[in-house]
Amino acid sequence: MPTTLSVKSQENAGVTYADPAKPDTTIRFRFASVNKTLNGVITPNYATEIIINDNNSITVGGVSALDALSIRVRVSGSLDSKTRLRQLLTSVAAQLGQWETENVMQGFRPATAPVIT
Image 1 (tube, rainbow, N blue to C red):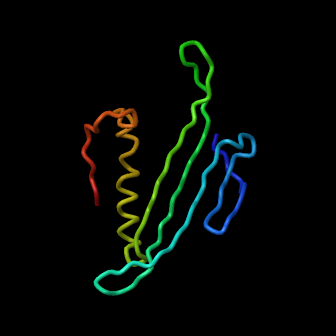
Image 2 (image 1 turned 135 degrees about the horizontal axis):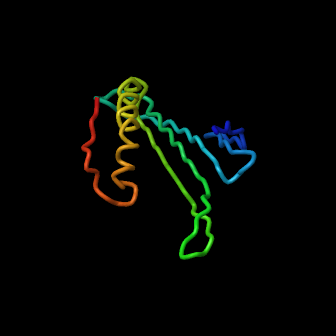
Image 3 (image 1 turned 90 degrees about the horizontal axis):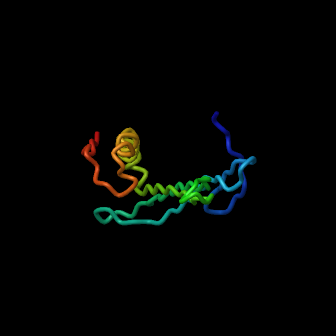
């Protein structure tokens, strides 16, 4: 059943959400903006990181353990590239499930080539 996370902490550059029933399950958003130069024109570059952490109870060799899980997504670009960033994110997100079944997350090369729109 889906769980809506609650704000756990806020800082100048982001916010962290957590599951009140399992506070080690967090999703953190970090934001940064630094100017960059494109063809001699200074424009803001926005960077956003989404960091997901969780502890998963597993059994290894008959011994119980907590496996620290981590997922990190970093997106960076100018505001004028927002549409293209969305296209890239959507394309890759649609393929993550397939790559997971191909054991890419365990170090195997993907059998399914990336498709970008």
